[in-house]
Length: 299
Image 1 (spheres, rainbow, N blue to C red):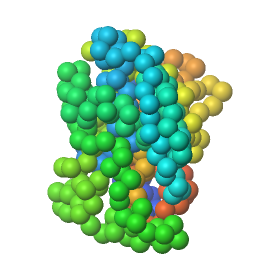
Image 2 (cartoon, rainbow, N blue to C red):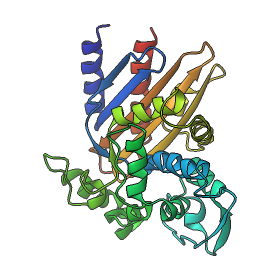
Image 3 (cartoon, helix red, strand yellow):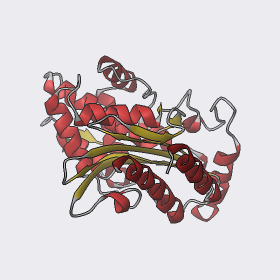
């Protein structure tokens, strides 16, 4: 099928399912790629934890930080549905920097990530990305800021109201009345920028190989696997990724490595127009679109 016809059909599927998406699939060996609006900027939510991990590991490599150093981490004491790990702890804990990296990436622990941001602030993470020649991803705030949205102000039974606010307040320039959804104020990026980051982590680049290898390992340990993983993991393929979720945004960026040696970077950033917090069908749809794009390239 011709690529333009394929893409137009997938866009129609997304629209029918109440989604708009920015996708990019890239063959990491040939460089061939296919995408849907891959340069459209989105607030990236927890996807920012990948650059954060890379920047932290680079500082450990340089001797500026010690991965074995233990930090006293204050509990998140969050009781609303969703957050995991230290975010839900009731008491302080002593945790090594290396282990905070694992919690941040494997279970998307927001308190763990903010403990790392306390060491390497967002502006430093952005500078690290630029030093590696990577543009299009910008860190502007700590993860804790994501816990101050309309979703936390409504009773869980009225979560649809928060989603209605998120859906209806975009401006033409990708601004938003909710700061965490405004691409000029939020941690932001594009599908292409995340594909570039994945390529830099999986193939030789300006990122030190020891740093890249550890980030790959952390992404392979990701336990949040209901989104794209079902369409990419098998006995003959491994899937390493990071998800990001905020109000009506559902993202994932990762790499599928096949037993035949081929590898594809896949970045999927989506927004839903359906005012509902739980939408498993949206995750099935975004995975199907990503796999269809990968299948096209693989052929």
